[in-house]
Length: 434
Image 1 (cartoon, rainbow, N blue to C red):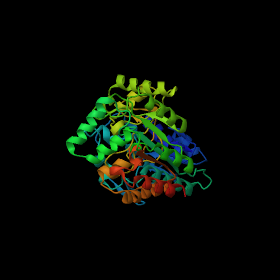
Image 2: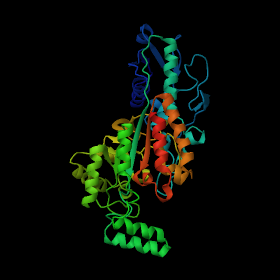
Image 3: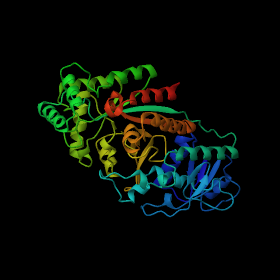
Image 4: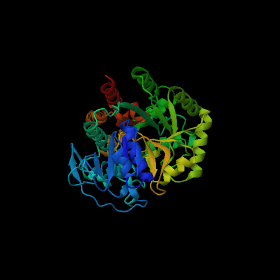
């Protein structure tokens, strides 16, 4: 396909690669030459200010031809059970909105560069997004729009080869604390007993004592359960290991503990393993480098995958630091407080650094749902959470996207506040695969 554009920019190349090449499998070339475009006899698309003849035409907004970031002013339009920004009016438009500008706005996380509103952990909030405000956060809008674009182009060119996407499920596990009681060391163990005594939690005291005496399994130790599910459903999960120094929000086992090192090696035998950068390494590249090196040393291989602890991310600085440390794939793109699609897409994409106005080699893997979102933020029980998870799976299956689920070993232990959640997870896997 030949695409006529008024100007070739990094943004133009990024979004056309995403929409045409990656999501639709359409090979294309860009041209600035209207004469060449008119003479071309194959499939073509005009992306610009005005239509030339009767070719497929998308009226272009200016956002893809700019280099700076500024407040956006656009009209919205209802389209195929979605709401789309960058509405266009007039005859001859392939779609009632600029599908390329709209997709770039979402996938680049343009609005996160503009708003200074953050929660107590410094995170951009789901409730501040254009998608949430328009009731679209739980729809993979970019995938939906890409399929609509492909159908429109096929109507013009029936022989145009458009790839049919295939649904994929990726389970991921954050190991914030490998064990609730084991291997905590003398001071943390004694402190735990004293805390339980002060609060009068006798059941927790008994549980802690039984675990430490080997009479009971640690409530966070759900790894055998995970391994069994991986074998049964042929899962290919990814584990993200927190190995920063102990701190207020970083409470995993010390990576110097032999039992924890042994567990990490076992996880590495069953699945891919990535770094879970600590809360306190948020924007501290030296601390982040140390954590990556520590985990890499245990696994005896370089690390390429990452997901931030607490999903604590600042764009673009967090991603710039990962790139500097040779991390190629990040799985942080999602919200803690709401379920859905933070970048409006259920597929991997390359991070576009708006600060430097350039596409990078960092691959971003957005997740759709986290256990803590349902339990802690939305106050849903396991049964209602399963319904929400099924709804999101259906949304992703409809567009042939990738559904990434985030859970924790603590959750799958099924103790205390997580009673019923191992069953919820198994039921979700059965819904996905059966």
